Image 1 (tube, one colour):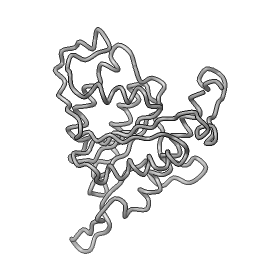
Image 2 (cartoon, rainbow, N blue to C red):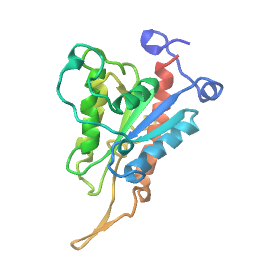
Image 3 (tube, helix red, strand yellow):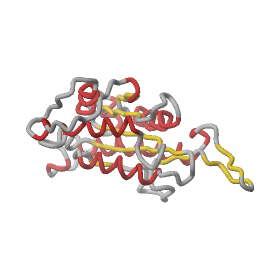
Length: 228
């Protein structure tokens, strides 16, 4: 098989993947809370990708020691970072994966502080050479409010992935209607007078579940188009 971008269309089928062609999908949870709403969304995406034959892994950003960028600019000269911490561990997993999914809750109109610190530290993978060029990328976000900055945060994450050379896919089924701008969630349920009623979990939102599952399928499909 050959890769589509080199002039020959190629699609890995589910049977080919399950028959021994390894497809790896990595998710990174940028939440400061492990195993909560953002992790739930990422796990749904991964479960669907796994059902399509992919190997999957979820990383929790809080499990890693990540120091802030020092702006030493070593990465302007070579593809390495001067700081010795766990960023290299995550970076190695990103480079080994066919697809990388980033997830972040919205605390104040943006990605979380921990995730932004990690994003800054990936400069060495981008400044001299895009080490993730040709991989697949995707993102999910969640906030408490119905319009709590999810769209802005999704754009930030997707632009970050694109800058690294990843081909970003979204959660739309191209054969069906459009339901949302992407895999974005909210805990908002309804408004009664001046009182907001909240869902207890993002898992209570059927639209989020639908979009995350479709995103998982789209990721594996995209890998099949670009990998031979």
